[in-house]
Amino acid sequence: VGEVLITEGLATTQFHKDGEETSPRYDELRAAEAVAKASKKGLHSEKEYKAPAINDLSDPKKAKAYSGSLMRAGKLKAIVEYCFNGSRFKMLIPSENCYIMFAPNYLRSPQPSPPPGRQSKPAEPFGDTSKRHARLTLLQRTVEISCTGVTMGGVITGSLFVGQGAARKDYSLELVAAGLATVDQRKIDYGEAPKELVDAQLTAQKNKIGIWSLETVAETKSATGGVEKTKEEAATIRISEIRSGSHFFYHVVNDESVKVIEDSMKLFTTNNGTDGAPCDVKVNKVVAALFDDGTGKSWYRAKVLEKQGGHKAVVLFVDHGNVATVPVATHLRPLEVSLGTDRIPPVAIEATLSLTVTRPLSDENGLDAARMLQSTCWGKDISVRTQGKDEAGRVNVVIKADSDETVNEQMVSAGLARVAKPQVVDALVARMADGSAVLKLAADLNVAQETARKSRAGMWRYGDIPDDDDEEL
Image 1 (spheres, rainbow, N blue to C red):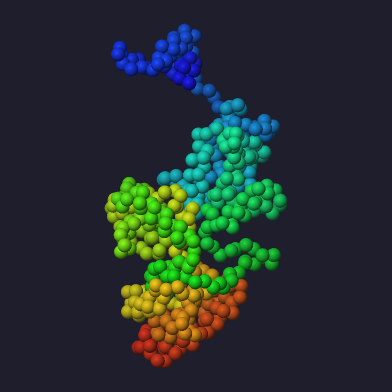
Image 2: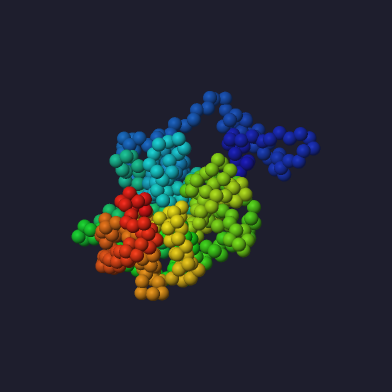
């Protein structure tokens, strides 16, 4: 390769002093350089060098004018010059001597973070992951494209393949299968999307990979134009963190992902030790954070919530729910890509007691409510009913107690909590496929609250609570 470069006048040989170690082919390289100088090739030419003019088709008018010739050309070799997101690129096509903006057919990838200093739309979930995947897979690599159309904005669309021979693969199929892009729903509805792309998306959706790992209430419109309702579901859980009397995190019992992430982080600790490492600390970035649970220090996945003066950071341990302030230098290090929350979603689920409102821990009754929840539920497998999510994305939970009452009712009857306002009840009923269970819970809680009020229990010991105090709850 060196000899070819030198012969074409694209490189020169390095000068060596007598006695210095040289390449076994040094004489051949010097001879090739002499040939290039004699024929005045490349950098040995006496002519003034002029960079070749490359036609830039990023302009919409030019792109539309030249799109026909690109589509007729069939399969083309292109070099990816820049990745805007997971499915939009700037490419150089040497055979056509032009730059184009290119996007694979049928795909829609999430929006990544804007460049520093530029005002733009905020990043969407998995936007940065999708862009990073594109950069690692395609950037500065030769790919094969087939142009099939052009958008109003001058973006050439078509198919995109990367690799050669047995390693050749369809980039669109790979991106959808990894859950880093979605197939355009309109193309699916009109039957235009290829079956293999649709099947790959369904598989990713079923396995909750990437974008599909986000737990959201389904908003697929039904034939009547409404929104799909949430059904009440039964589950067995174990609480992992208590934030207040009605706010906590939990693990689903027998969830294999809990064991997978625990074993993975133990292995991560074994491989990396317990020393901190230089880490890019940004708000909402998931890193590895050191924590001692009483059995020794170990690394856990954590999301950065806040930076404090550059030396400390507030982190949320996403697989347990606890929050801690840790030194950046000694207690944080980068997390392996395979352990990211895009690959393995957080196993701790944030929840709240359904229709049950407690005071903060700074209040005496709020602290008593948290202690009651701890004494009733901590360290044991408990049976619950889930009733969708609230506006903050927390799962609404009804905890079954040993008696006929629920823990929700017990807390209200003890005067440590109040029933949510009627508008909150109505909103939850509207989101449920069958709101009868929510209405029954609301009725039972109101009975328990009236009992607590009459017996002057807990927060009712000084009589009725005024409306302004109600707002503080």
